[in-house]
Image 1 (cartoon, rainbow, N blue to C red):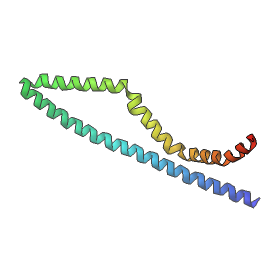
Image 2 (cartoon, rainbow, N blue to C red; image 1 turned 60 degrees about the horizontal axis):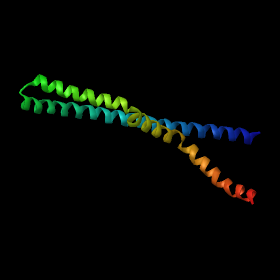
Image 3 (tube, helix red, strand yellow; image 1 turned 90 degrees about the vertical axis):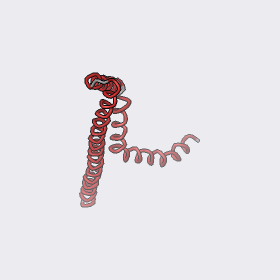
Image 4 (spheres, rainbow, N blue to C red; image 1 turned 135 degrees about the vertical axis):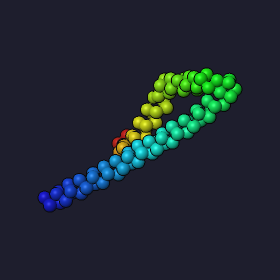
Length: 124
């Protein structure tokens, strides 16, 4: 009875450690994506301002240049909406599933490789 209690306690501790590890990885992923997005927004703001200034010099109109850059961003936004699953959703789901379920896949692969000789012997 004591062994069962110790085993249950160890399993509980293992579960807590695995949960902490997975949560740490997910939070790190979220913070990394957030930091990259903030930096990308800053880059796009500066690039769009530079593009507005360049186009304004060529076309001699700040308004037309601003509208052209706004139209460019509208087209980019529409493309991102159309391809959001391929660009955003699939990679995020893949990364999260790798973080959350990688251990289970390794366990399943180990169990399958251990059971292969048994299955081959049964077939013969």
